[in-house]
Amino acid sequence: MNLHEYQAKEIFERYGLPVSKRSLIKSESEIDDAINQIDFSNGCVAKVQAHTGGRGKVGGVKLCKNKADIEAFVNQWLGKNIITIQTDELGLPVQTISLEELTDIEKELYMSFVVDRDEKCVSMIVSEAGGMNIEEVAEKTPEKILKGKLNHEYIIEDQDIIKLSNSLGFNQAQHEQFKNIVDGCSKLFKDLDLSLLEINPLVVKVDGNLHCLDAKINIDENALYRQTELEAMRDASQEDEREYEAKLNDLSYVALDGNIGCMVNGAGLAMGTMDTIKLYKGEPANFLDVGGTATKERVSAAFKLILSDANVKGILVNIFGGIVRCDLIAQGIIDAIKEISVEVPIVVRLQGNMSEEGKLLLNDSGMNVIGEDSLQEASKRIVELVK
Image: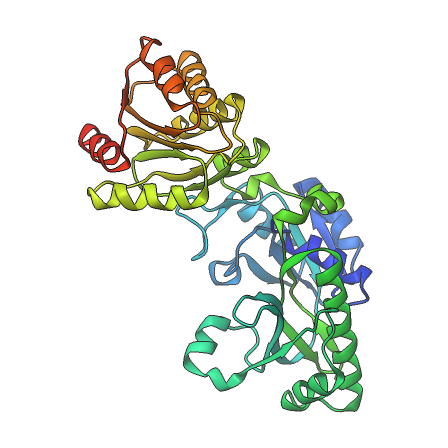
């Protein structure tokens, strides 16, 4: 789960990390109040708040010298969608604009904490190439990427911090600030169950002090049950509507570009199902896993979710009954079809626990559902029907 930049900076402040003073605008009537909350003597920086990078490259970040500049920026963006290289063609809605006090920048750096699966730890990454696409820096100038590892207590050893500090050219005062920022970020990462914390750029100001000019936080969704405050900060408007609806029903759903809806139980089975559809020259429209303990209510919700995608021209249901009962899956399919007008072909493959009872339910339902016993035949059949 992602947070907006202004939300991340609110959290940064709690952990003693240096960030710019800011105010928020959620309607045109709030402009005057927002200006009065910050030092506007030399202007400010207006920032679109949306869950995407690259905002500045499309005009979503602007230096405003007077109130007229802010009004123009608010009129341009508030209530509109921002489209960047990280969004789809529809972009993301802009419901909040942040005004930040100006920062006199001498140098821009990069800093992040990330779950490092190769090293089996949390790693801290720093670079002198701040403000840039870090993936591009890593590819073209890998020598500019420096790394430190957090131990099992989420602490970076002092000698490693000194090494990174020296590599970035910090003096003694800056080193102490750097250490404080590292310690604060490490504690924040652990306390809030993060999967990513990024500061790009971390800047050296003209007065020599370090400052977090940007803030990005990603929370591990598997830990949200113990991060209720963070979950309350979730902005569903920034997420795919169907994927968000899936989360509310304890479903794993990822929208894809094809036209064959897939409903399975288990991530491995989902991957195998999509691969087999591709083998027969079909294109999956989604990855949807109803889980190993699926109920008929969850299956019904999953079916409705698939059919909410206008691109879906056919549905393949592939269920292996281990813990889950195939007859409950079948009843969920029947309930969903009764509730929704279904005009696309449906192919169902049930194997395992109560699969014969499930097939009998489908056969006696009087509905236009095609049953197959093998994944290959089921995938081949739905591809043919869709074509």
